[in-house]
Amino acid sequence: MKEAEVAQGHFWCGNSTTEAKRRGCAFNKLHNRWMPPACTQDFEHARQAVFEALGGGEEPEFVFYRDEDGKPGTEITDDELNGFEILMPAWTTVGHHMTHCMYLLLQAAAALNLGTKADMVVHAWEHAKHCAMVVLNETKKAPAWNDVKSFGHTQSGVCW
Image (cartoon, rainbow, N blue to C red):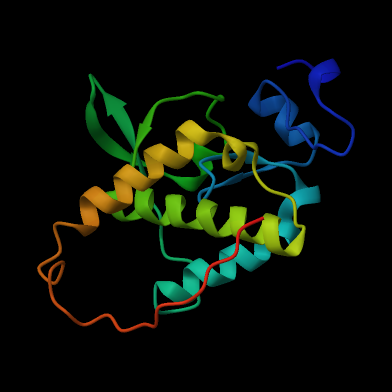
């Protein structure tokens, strides 16, 4: 992406870690990318909701690992992570991956319902499908998948 391709009202961190830092961006472990400070407050609704869903209301310790010949390697420290170039390959846990996906789903809902900003990947259908596959493929492994314990009411639907 080039500067001229960034629409007015959109905030971009640039093509490199150096440029991202110069623009005041910070690496965000929930996004797995450098994010602009102008978006931080808009992401707070989704951030708080996902941490509440995890049961603590506080950010868990998300860890990344080096890629060593296509396999997870040694742990990457936060200092190292903040120095890695954009598109550096890394591994993380299934739990982090599912948390990332649910966070972006909540961010999409906040953007639709509250008018907040959203990460550009929230607007990408392919990423949404990928996240649905990740979450559902892991969830259906749960022992309670077929337990009859979910209660609700049928309703009359509306769409717009």
